[in-house]
Every structure is written in structure tokens, then in C-alpha cells.
Image (cartoon, rainbow, N blue to C red; front, side, top):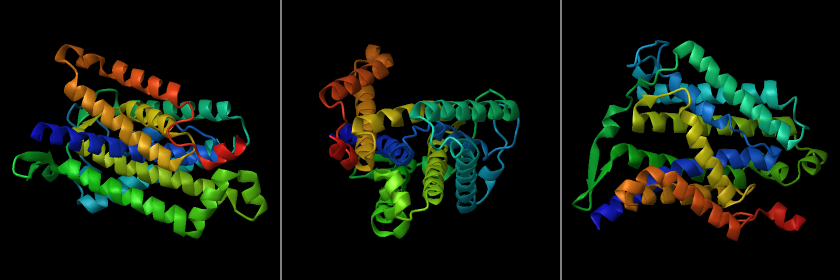
Length: 305
């Protein structure tokens, strides 16, 4: 029973991260029909902002050595600035382009960021530990030992999700963002400033990227210039499984993908665990065969039908 609860906690922690990133993807897709694969590279930028440029395997800390509130705010600021710059310099001029063009542009931004990091920091993975106190385990219910960083991850993601729900439902800008996601042209005709709303959406995606960056580095202690790529691919799968254009579906899809990943790693036979991703993708395909529109269909899609 304790082992099962441990797996559940791990699944909830990983699933919450995927849910958060899936929300960032779903938010931009709902507004611009943009699948922004550069979202993962915002995470990488935030992580590398913690250290000084060096070719050493053990990173020399810069921002990572500052008091944790200042460190977190700095990483978040770096990611928000990166997101806003890509919106202003790349995606705004392509605002009325086809979704395929926007997708290619997001890949171009992703490769650009990766190669800039490669030039400045080198391609060697680096060890960089932050928030060392969170690596200690906390004992719950007698025998269940949970890493402090997992509890912090769950609490942080829960607060961010709740704040995002309140923002979207009960603030003027949140209502405008939902209106733009439903019908961009009509929202503009009704007086919504599209540029401001889209820039805000990118800012939120940068905020999510910065928080995720800190949490991932605290959990793994490793930096790599492609560290955000695989994470964002899983988050994209979560968005598709949950339902493209549905923020609730994106969050649900994140928890589904995270839970499946952890349970497969825990309960597959040992000699088959290296094929975990193959099993995961097979399950994703099965879900989409049964629900091609995703687990939750957004209102706009239902109205088009």
C-alpha cells in the first residue's frame, strides 16, 4: 500500500507539471491557433540563467546562489522577457499567417534559442543544484516518504492553476482573453485590444515556463540545452489528449499523461521499462482513436459542429 501511495504521489507531481505546461500550450492555441514548441526553450533559458557561462560539467552558480525569492523572480523574469520578445519579433508579424506557418516559426525560434545556449554555454550537460533543502524527504502517514520538492511542486502548481482560473473567470483581462479565444475577429470588433491580450498570453506562458524551470532543476539538478524539448512534447500530447482549445482539457490531459508515465515506469516488467514511451504513445493513440476530439471538446468546436 505504501509503495502504491508513493507511485500516486510521483504521478501527481509529474502530472501537475505536464498540466501546467499543457495550459500554456492550450492558452496560445486557443487564442492564435499556435502550437508554440518554443515553450520548452523558455524553460531551458530560465534554467541556464541560474549559472555563469562555462564549459565545466559542474556549473558555477550565479542567480542560483541568490536568496530563493530573488532567484525565482529572476528566472521568471527571464522567461517572461523571452516569451514577450518572441511574440513581438516573430509571432506578431505572422499574426494572420496560416497555422502551419506559425508552427514552423515556433520550431525556428526553438532551434535558435537552443543554438544560442549551445554557443554561450557549450553542449555539455551541467550539474547545478538549487534549493537543496527540498531534496530531503518528508515522512507522511507513518511510512510514506515524499521528497520535499514533490510537495512544493504540487502546492505551487495547485496555486498557479487556481490563480489562472480566477484570472480567466473573474477579471476583465481574463474575460477578454476568453473572448479572443472564442472568436478573435468578433472580439476585436467589440473593442478588445488583440495585441495586448496576445502579449499577455505569451507573458503567462513565460511565467509558467519560469516556474517550471525552477521546479525541474530543483528535482533533477541537471542542465542540458535540450532539456525542455521532451517535456514540451509530453505537454503537447497532454493538450491533444485533453482537447485542443480546452484549458480544462489541457490540465486533465497533463494529469493523464503524467499518471500513465509514472505507473508504466513502476509496474511494467523490469526488462520492458526501457519501452515505456512506446507503451505510453500506444495508449495515447488508443485514446485518440476512441476520442479524436480529445477528452473535453471546447465550446467553440461544439458550436462549429
